[in-house]
Image 1: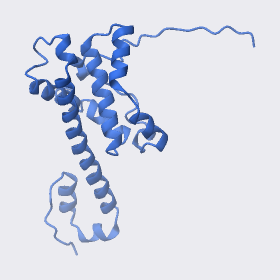
Image 2: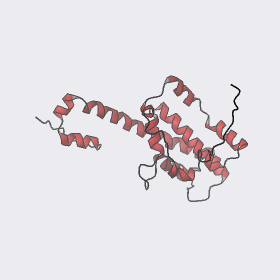
Image 3: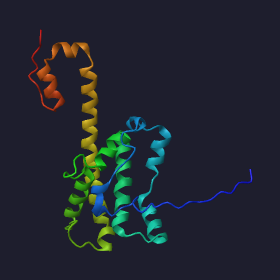
Length: 195
């Protein structure tokens, strides 16, 4: 008892980078085992209750964050909400945020580029604060994120089905190894039985 409690500030400046620099996103929790589990009911409700607009307004007025950083908040919140609603795990959601290869843009970088293009803007060009704040950009981002999440959810379901099928003795017995390799690559396969 009687000890002193102190507050040590840490640099959180990279929490909301400019949406122009999403290539540097790194999520340390991506491969933690719990990231591959579905959300419990409490967490699902919490995610549904997130309000990107209110958070953006608060950060704009209290901290004066630049609009392109607030777009990052909007993208992240919208992504987590859409992904949770679609049944994606945190791991699958994180994969949409990070680059798998340094030279290949992440899914969210693609989302941002497409949304800006829909609004006649680009990451390379000059974008005003009013353009970053526009309802048209937010709506374009929402549409692009929803489409990207739906594709990821389809892939997650197909991947789960493949794992279930490939673990079945009957499936392995009736499917040739070349068919299994084709399925793993996402192809069809000949369907031939191996005796």
